[in-house]
Amino acid sequence: MDLLDWHRGRLSSRRLSVLLKHLPRDSNTVRALHGESAEWTLTDHLLAAAVDHLAVANWMFLSVNRDEDGEAPERPQPVPRPGEDVEDEAEAVTERAQTTPEELRQFFR
Image (cartoon, rainbow, N blue to C red; front, side, top):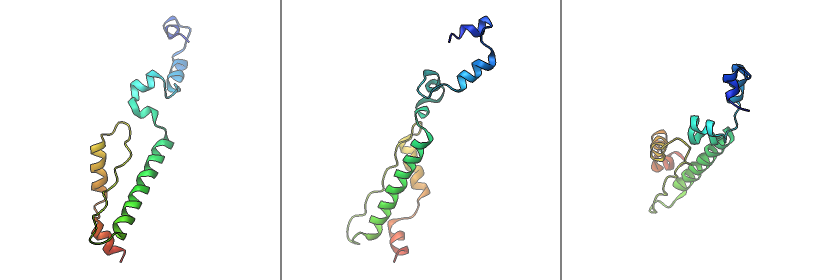
């Protein structure tokens, strides 16, 4: 398909619009418009969320069941998402979960 056909009148604007809307994710045009996030599908985002939730659940389990004199486990870092700064996401996760390990231990007693 030659884009000059649009200027020549052999390709309608509607057809050109349909072609552009349905470009594959790995096309240069989609990458230029959406950046790295174009490579992530809904499945990829859901998988990353599932991994993050599982890591937090394991961290909470370890925090509650650890020896009181032992060192508290380190909070897990979220899976980096495209287009997001890793430090900003870590701060956002920390702000969302303001429960301390001590509060968790008290809750589950």
